[in-house]
Image (cartoon, rainbow, N blue to C red; front, side, top):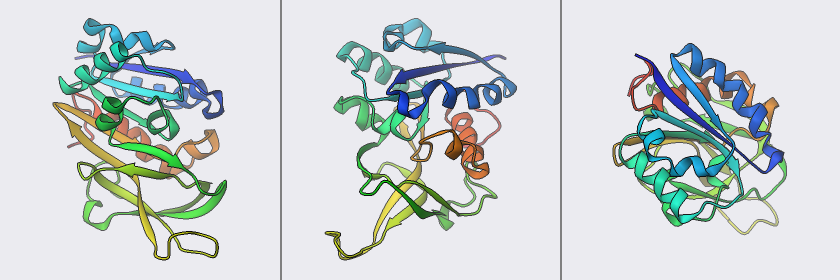
Length: 224
């Protein structure tokens, strides 16, 4: 049975939405997905297309989502369409409260530019199919400070350490990778993926593709 993935890409070119999503389209195809690519957010108003879509992969930083577009996307996810993506292409996209409640997070800032930091797999979630067999790692990139909620199943974290000139006097853990359920739909998000160098890091690439497959309505062999 063929599954259907919709890749929605555009917005700020600094996150190379075309090149970034092109990295993962072959993996989706190999997993049995028929892939459609859209560069117009009006695709979210096509109820018939979304109802037939098992997975939406979004890479769209900034931009404006109309109320009709937002309602179409959120309704589709609530009905079972999976939603997945990474970095600013999800949590720094749009300003719609219904959208951010669905994805489970909102980007606030990266207090520094590129910094080296550790990504730690939560030991209690190490058996989750997205991160199973993967070790924590160190990466140099933007360290995202976000607002999130308790519905998220956090699979990996980082920590903002206190330092001179910083307003927080204690370490602040921050999620890096999470999943969540919204209605009947599954959602995957990773804060990693600023550029192609980051997305081709072996662990980042592996967990990202696994996350996309996990979020699909029809499943992918990636498990629950």
